Image (tube, rainbow, N blue to C red; front, top):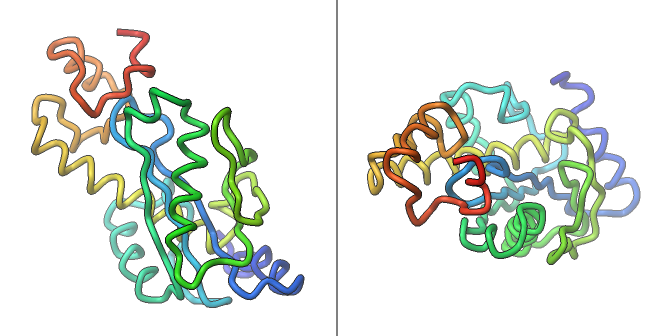
Length: 204
């Protein structure tokens, strides 16, 4: 991510009169197990966070380091999640939107405006209410969204490691709930557990 471009979207929003601009992103839309997580963060404009990038492009060690730095630098930050059972009851897009809105609602002080990763701002049963702009590939274009993606990803990974201790037979610490060969093997051997998304298990 080139340093010069990182704050362009935030500066644009600030120029339009938005005092507190938050970035928001989610992690865990695709896995077969576990919640979908969202992170929301308001950073002082121009905050330097060396190595900041889309969480998917960083090693776990770099994500953990940046997680602490983002929390320390932020004016406000929050993480929220929507559980597997609710994903099954609604749909993953609605669950993603709800997790993002829940995270933004926790910010204190609250945001005037949000930069949202992706192209969608509503699902069948839930829509974002904070004034916002959607940004395709936002986690590669905006410092705030990249920071939010790290908060969401690290929080979700930590949760899945915790679940690995509760349900050791699935090896969640290795695949974090994604549909890997190992995960499918364990699912076929043991069947789903309470944190599996039943609506995602059509191929078993």
